[in-house]
Figure 1: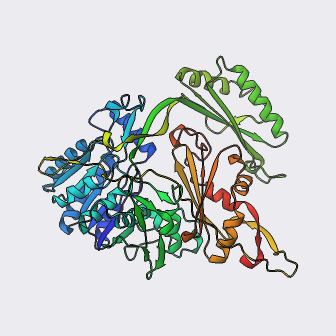
Figure 2: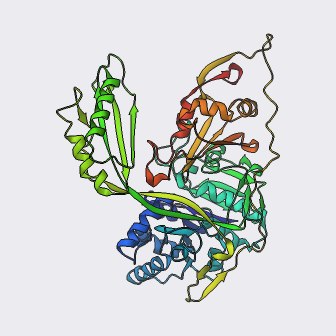
Length: 567
């Protein structure tokens, strides 16, 4: 097997993780995922200021101590930290190596950047346009002897799949093996989320202060064991792995540029302390298109949070809304009020007697949402509701981003790896493809039988989280919520009870939106995808929780009638 550890799940993850993973125990490969939709926007703005930038500079700083350690230990490093400028990062690593007296063999993967052709490809005129490439450029670089491979926008799992494919010599049509590696990659690419981070049942973990980063031991048949270094915090259990498997997915088919992975075939079993074995994964030919990440500057935004305290809160809110809107010389293109009811009657502290009224504005013109908006809000300080104050005085407007996904034919993208000797090799697109379609034959389990003599089950109204875990996240402007339970009896209840209708009832914000429900019986899980909940993506900050990170926890806090036999 090949032992692959991951030291970064996002731009800004634990800085010391690279050193911790390299020195914590044996590894063959160390990976790092630095890219997300918001990161691509940040890097795009960096590149506008300085064309030599556009990569994750944190990664370069981590290499100041990590590069020599990796070379001494024979650990390969693979990362997508190249962002919008993988060649620039490769050159920066070369320069750093010279200063450190090191001589790594550096390769990089490019071809994902479609910005120069975005109009021609029907993608408009965004700030960034990057196709999600696959793992074969990485694999080619490692086979050519590279010590380090940096890429632009590849799928998150590709930094794990590439080393596994190179190590085991897989062919491009070995879909089951590739799918197994995709699943392992999906589990570890978000770092500590596989070892207890963001885990619904976190109070069950005995050592959760500083969770260790995850490792995947990937075997030649595509099966894997998820684990972590000894003497690190957190835990690797079936449920921590299952929670991450449900993160940012849709249905049973999980499409990628190299393989479409069947999530309904995953088998999980415990394999000892902090070890979970993944097997049985099946794969199919990939779709005939690449997904493209498109980021644009949508305009400018600003906001102010009014604090309302004590009595007549609704009347106070109505007054300040009317006053502010009348005071604006020009109404912004988007003006949204949100009232968060957090007060307690007869409260013993002023904070508990208060609610927060947010006014968020957006407009293409920075002047409309800048000083004109801020001044209108501040000028109400002595002329509005009793007890007027704001959390932070509003300032100038700031730009916000818009994300959307595009799709292009795989033959329109030139996937290229530049090897350590400077030679360039083109990676051909998949020779066999299959259009992506939902899996139609997944059936719910038998319902839970009636257990009482009266023919009705005795139930108790409790939070759903008493018996179910959840993990949620963003998919562009959509959000997903994966809900799972921990035994077959409860699964039979969940599959028949947590319908789309009940989901919308429990989360009223989703009622006007389209919600898709997918069953994953092998994981005892139901996944919901809510279209449009996040507006134009995380950078647009369309809602209180712009990445839907806590949407699952909100769902778990809602009360439902649960059979007492399950409690």
